[in-house]
Image (cartoon, rainbow, N blue to C red):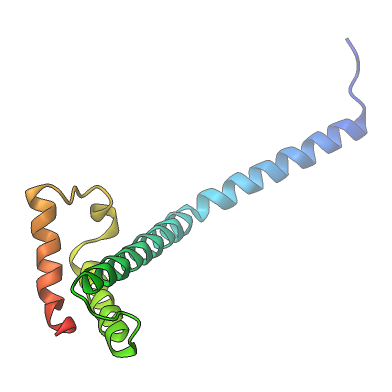
Length: 123
C-alpha cells in the first residue's frame, strides 16, 4: 500500500474544508437563495405577461382599424396592460398562475376578473 505524503494530506484537508465551508454557506443562505429564485421567476413571469398583453391588445386594436402607432393609443394599451399585471400581482401569485389553465372555467374567470378591473383603461 502506498503512503500518502504530508503535502497530499494537507491539500485534501484544505479541499475538504473548502467544500464543507461551501456547503455550510449555501445551507445557511438557502432561504435567501430560494427567495431570490422566486423573485426572479415572478419578475420573468409578469414581464412576459405584460409583453403578451401588449402584443395581444395591439392586435385587437389594429383589427378594429385603429392606428396603434399613435402615441395616445400606445399609452392606453401600455397603461391597460400595466394595470392587468399590477392586478395579477395582487390577485394571482406567479406560483399559482404558472399552472393555471386559461382555457378552464377557473382560469377564464380569474383572467376575466383582471380584465374587468382594468377595462376602463382603453376607453
